[in-house]
Amino acid sequence: MMKNQVNKTFWILFFILPGLLIVTIFIIAPLFMSMFNSMYSWVSIDRDRWVGFENFVKIFTKYPYQDRFFNAIGNNVQWFMTTMFVQNTIGLLFGYLLFKRIYGSEIFQRVFFIPVLFSVVAVGFLWGLYLNPNMGVVNRLLNDMGLGQWAMAWLGDEKLATPSIIAVNIWRWVGFPTLVFYAGFNSVPMETVEAAYIDGVGEWRLFWKIMFPLIMPAVTIITVLTLIGSLNVFEQVYTMAGLDGGPFYSTDTLGTLFYRTAFGGIDTGLPEIGIGSAIGVVIYVLTFGISAFSIVALRKREVEL
Image (cartoon, rainbow, N blue to C red; front, side):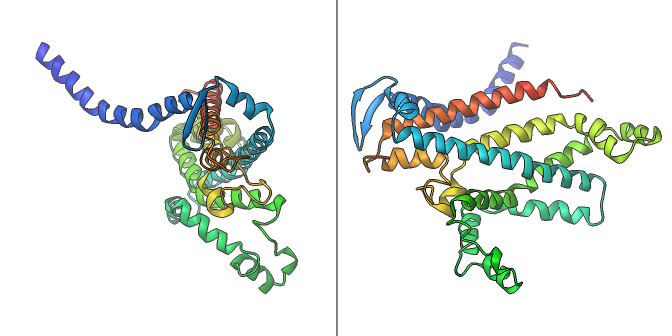
């Protein structure tokens, strides 16, 4: 009996410890290092003196950090709202259409997911070329179709840059919520659907009153992942607009602000590791706090099958 218990404990540790070690090295340890470094005045390679929460005070109250920080948060909010209501709504619609077995649904299941497999760096650089105002494919197609008035400097206009990057990101990622929602719809017992049809329930009421409440676990997953992704946007902006969040910081996010501050500085031109670490801690706190709240709030709406 004791031997079996020892063997069971051994195998549990055997499978848990490697993952725990990776999480500790690449997530927990850097987090505590960032928290420690955020308490110091650290410019360039020299860690100077202990300043407590002064770096956090600078982020929220001192120019230019305050302006850059709240501008970046505003852009992150724009990312979340657009992704949540455009990408995930499209994914919900596509997932339902696949569930209804529309013509060609088996092919569409694969086609929708193909862009998700592409490298974010490759997608960013390619779409940066496609959206080039002078020799990009998008403007050339618009001109060829007689729609030259719609040809824009997509990444050079303050009002268009962020929506353009978000649109590319939606194109790349829409297949993911599509498949998650599709799996959610398939988990609904067919007896429930058949009973609704027998009772004369229309397609819209079937979807909104029966199907949607039953896939709330999928909605919870997608909402939380959208929150996490929107608060940690970096690669797409970096590859399409650069680290400076141009034009005029209109595409700047917390991710690019953190990188630019920690490794390039905002007002000194030198790496400001202390303030950059403080921004990193804020990103973590926001991500963890909002995600935890969303999980708790959405779990209350989940329906037991």
